[in-house]
Length: 553
Image 1 (cartoon, helix red, strand yellow):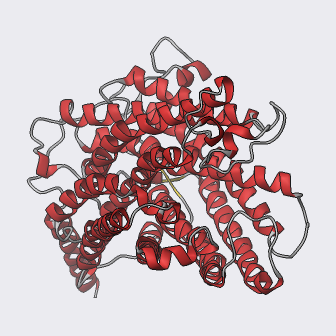
Image 2: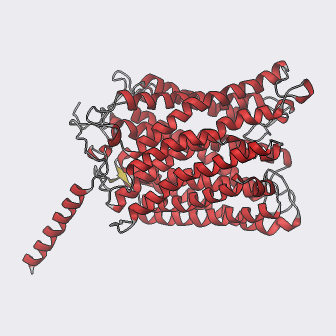
Image 3: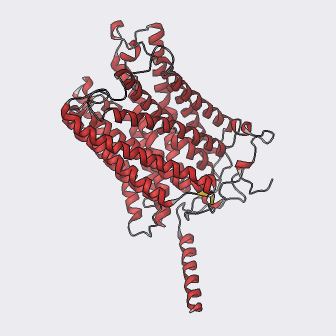
């Protein structure tokens, strides 16, 4: 086998061929590609369900589904989007593919555990889908599985909860793998302050995955025990406390918000300096803010529960902590904008998605402060304002960061380039559709429209109509983006090893990478975002072109 043989053409393990070479592979790049197709499959299902929900809400009264099917639709939409797309999307795909290469390793530390994580992910997804058609009815609790409803409904909650539990196990194993890989397999010349920011973001995320996920795993198992054995832990009729469930759920689920967004922030921290041709502004500040978000984000869970009757002291403490956790996030936004200041910016589809991310996530963060303050939160709690804020943060944030990562590392993963014009059109449609879809929800929420309701009062009809039109545009933009990427396989426009002029290690190897990643020992820069050599080469090429033009004249 030649050193430059693509991993797509090399069975792993060597004695296996065909589909078995993929299903039993231990190569981190192949597993990343398998995660990619699996995640995109679930993402397609989730956005289709979300699209149908929005069509139903465009007008008063029943249109395309009844109330029971509507409850099942938003439950499954939430479960798939959170547990099968937003949480695993960037770490499982781009973390698996890029992290080992960025630190000079030839694989993750536990390749067999990595393969097990993929199978647990697939098993969890299949269980979530099967729960629709078994056990006495669609799951109808919403993705939070709030008690006492989740322990009293006759619908098939246990299988859906077991699916979420299984997906949590996959997430923990991935986090454990990343932490160990960074500590044990980083090339010896690479110190902690030479690690790329995407890897730093995944490292911080992995600690949250490892420490917070067991809380939700145990909590979900307790729901199953409540239903099967009536142990009375959460059931008030048996002396249980429903608020205990909320505390346990949000003790995981708010840190999980940072599991969702930190990898996206890492993606943006890679894209901005690359297309600014400039070292990232405040590298150490971004590193420390990533770890700060991981720590502080674990202390603010009860801001979801201001209306539950907690004490004024508890409200003050959690409100203060919520405002404090915004500071390291603001540090990152300031660093990204500071990097672009007076830079030699080259516009590309990844950079366009990154800039959209900065705007949408900033809106989500600022509206989060509205919900972090108890006075305003009590007014808009459980309204469409929360729906809009959550989607600005998670979909406008993590979702658009995922799209940016797709366009940034697509040439590296597959060795082919996509059509830029279609990518720009898709990004524009998705952004405009996103704004028209969710901004009306802020207004509806302030008007008092509750979330998760199948129908609504006449005064909310105009806002829902506008939101529906925006949802259609958003859906079309996402579909065009995915079609454009898939069409690149037909066109087969070859990508060079470093199409963007990046300086981290993944851009120093062929596209797609060889089986063992590096064809020569990697060279680690003193500073991971030193663009001086790139700029010198660009200046030399420019000078050479000018010289040739003068000689021809």
